[in-house]
Length: 342
Image (tube, rainbow, N blue to C red; front, side, top):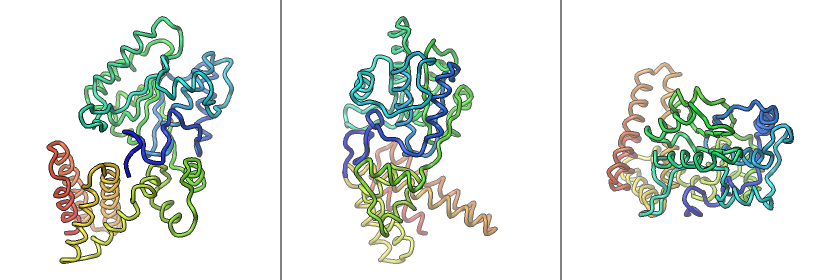
């Protein structure tokens, strides 16, 4: 499977145009009430696991604010954006003069997304505020996600957050807020979103045209997705369940059988345009090692737990080096599989 365009999974709807949001009613109510009160914070850190609706919520709230610029006259609840309204059409097309979406840019040479949000992207925010400084309108910046800011970009954002322009609103998204600069976190109001319940995940997938059809497949997707729509789509549309099964086969095999299974999996993961499933595998590998270390620690095997934690760190370093120097992906994967199964 390939992505519809960089950053959007096959089967997903870009958050700018997604009118469906499930499972975050309390967060929606909080945002609506705080905005209507006229005392909402200028920077909100929307945090939670990847793929649970943080960006969709951010665009939904931005649409609400831009559709009701006077807080006192705004409804006390968020509603689904009207795709026919001028505000929604401008947001969907990226043509809104009052909303800036900062995310990883596309590399013009490769057509793929770059690995980080750079300081050049953050400079767009400075230009955005300077161009709209005299309008009196709300100006909203969505940072999606702030985890992708490199060091220079993070420091540049921090400077703007320290002295925010009038009627400016920052919606800062994060999958792992603990990794953000503490100074950025301290200038934001945290809004934590939880993984979706099974019922909400089912509704979300049905709204995307990927309904679960019951039976063993549904049970497996719900168990492995951990309340994340993006994880569920990778399992359903990118062969994620097969990748996990192939990895488990490697862990349970030995000798020539294990080696053949490693090569089969490495061939799939290193295929052209398989970046999504490769990233999915790396996440799953990290989860497996973390769970292995946790289980060993609970059993009192602190030596084994420490050894597994160090293995996870070494694997992360190998992945970083491989990506930085564009090393052969298949060989990198084979090396990782050998490390884990040793």
